Image 1 (cartoon, chains in turn green, cyan):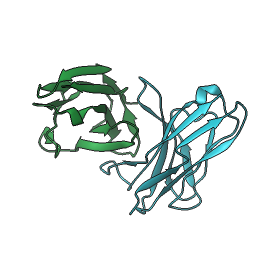
Image 2: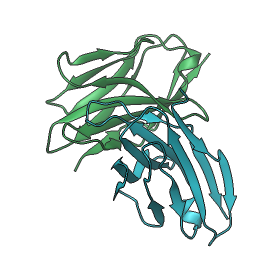
Image 3: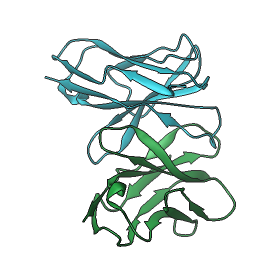
Length: 113
Length: 113
């Protein structure tokens, strides 16, 4: 079985500051890794995913995440956040031979002016 | 292309009542799933389906039934609502395979009194 731990339930940060949202996972088999974002009163949207190849993956709105196999981590970073980044962020894993996502508990990013 | 749609958006039930949450997708996806979202617990898988006529249990299936008579629709039935089923419910769909992105509906907020 897989499990995902998001180490921070809430992260307050000022606008234009850098941010890191931490994600660690546990799995006995190979997995793919995902970050989803949920804006207030909406469903989840895929932010980025790691399937293979370069361990650094980027999204179109400036977020990036690095897969670290030895530390079983997939932390999400952005060098300069905007008010519009205020949302809840979910890290998730999926076995490479399956369909089911396993989610972490979520991190609420609160960007303050 | 509407993606994944869910109805209703909000529902209040009394303990013991039954209801059906509707989910439909127009992307011809084979895989569909239902999650519940509770504070601090992320999303937990209730039931899933890998194609019409095929369903299986996820992590928290008790008190819920599903069926998949068509590729497009995947309703979730609450047989006898309990206050512990107060939650936000999300339906998701994807193509078959671990690399496929899951697309989420906007959610149904359920309150059981």
